[in-house]
Image 1 (tube, rainbow, N blue to C red):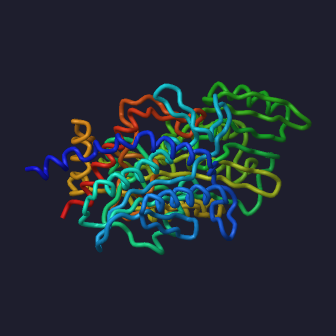
Image 2 (image 1 turned 90 degrees about the horizontal axis):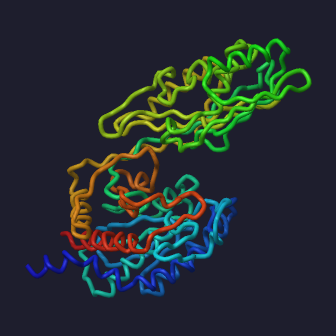
Image 3 (image 1 turned 180 degrees about the horizontal axis):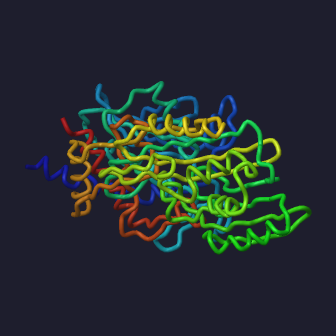
Length: 467
């Protein structure tokens, strides 16, 4: 049928917007929208709000209805009707960091590659989704339902942006977020992040113990300043033969500083790193007793040791859709008045996060540690045979001629904020090289990215045309 022929190739209309897309992306990249301290007006700082307001103004210039929910998030809307579909993207970025070959906030083109902070995560996808909306409008498509592109301003700092937005605005019936990889991520593990605090630092011999900088990464270094005898230092050095790790010793007045070198990795794949904190703790327990090292280190040693799977803690589990639970000791801080460990757990999609949390709380209380919850993000699981999965598979096949595979992740995207109605879909293809997403020289290949635009537009067209 003629209608079928039109819908088959609708996505290819995106290519006429390539130059305009790049021009606008350059302007959005130039806003250094790293989240900073909240103020009354700006929940994620002024630059994050600037980026949000800039893209909403651009959408308004294109002729769309827009709304801004208190600088948390906003949307551009096309069409009318009670049913609403959505695409979710974000305009905040991680800090630039060091090591760039060019200014991270100037879009720089080298051949087909476009460099700049946020060009992949997620400003490129946000801008592309807006241009897909424009392509629908320019083609005079008469949609059967409303379509929103929702722009968040605080994704990189915990996703409270969309939690607040959805208190004021309705949840879409179906949605995708182009903030991951192709094919379709229909399973995201649950995330439990918490810290355990000792009422006081009762480690008799630990003057200081520090390791890790953030909860959601494997610590690449740690160091302990220990009050001990010369004989203890000899025993510690001998114990290195029995404990994996890379340790260096610097003797000082009345003791020693031990430095532990590890390897960083994302908390969703702790086995790919080497935890400097847990291995240093294991070394100390070869020589010293629990009452000398205190409650926090004793908990780490007895309940986690150097494991990444939660087995000693009694929470090890796995399921067929998403794989095994991971447990990462992300950060330890022990000073004169303070003793805290911060832990990140990613649990299977069919599991119960509250049950895991209660189990850990009861374990922690045996060590006189208080439990402080940071985040409990419930898992996302959309069934493989859900109609929306079929729609996205069809859009992908129409644009690429290939079938989209389904996959699981331990990472977290906006998909989990939409209560089971959203999945991550694109923009990176399976065979693409590393694009340095959170690293220096983040980039996209414009040819690949326009192909993503074709898939994105096809999916958006299908979402608003289905009955």
